[in-house]
Length: 256
Ligand SMILES: [Zn+2]
Image 1 (tube, rainbow, N blue to C red):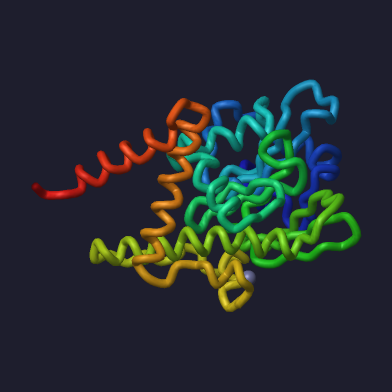
Image 2: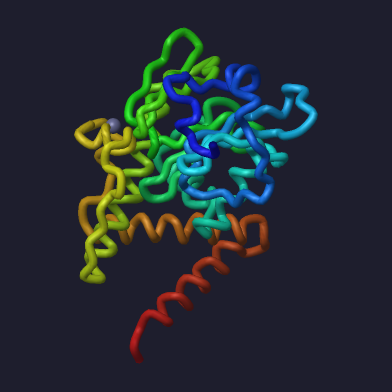
């Protein structure tokens, strides 16, 4: 029952779930967010007696929770430790202007509207095998083989998916190079998703993806700089504070 395949051959959309699909849904307010969320539908303003989000989950099926999609997305730090922090820095590094996605390695959640500051619908691109944009609808085919649709009032879906993929590829490439320094190898668990489909692209953003260790170091430096600036900006002499902190970190790396 609590399985995504309860909707065999049915295109999953908010309208359908709230109409014919509603009787098949269940409530799970103990749900803790994880990477197996396929999609989130914002239903805050739908006038329902209960629930603010619909969760489409790989193993748990489709269910209703009282928390809003914004609250759910902001809980991701509980499972990945960093929440939106790295995504925000990565997005500004690439100068992407769209609504902020949540990227963590080969996990990529893209908001269809609104972004992280308001309630939005979200799609997990690591569960997407293909997509198309028809009028103002975004259509996705999941890696499990079902179809899911969202309202997509504005923007170029292909560009949006590409840009989330760039961020994921940057993250994955950095992790792979870094782990090589530990004599480890890391591979993408589900390489058939759209997050790896743009890997042969040669646009300026894709050319920024690290290929060697020094580039990963630069990325980490940028990350540390951004965090320090966020922490200290506005304080008197914050530039000096940042320099002192960084010198202290450098010292701890040395063997005296
Ligand atoms: Zn590209």
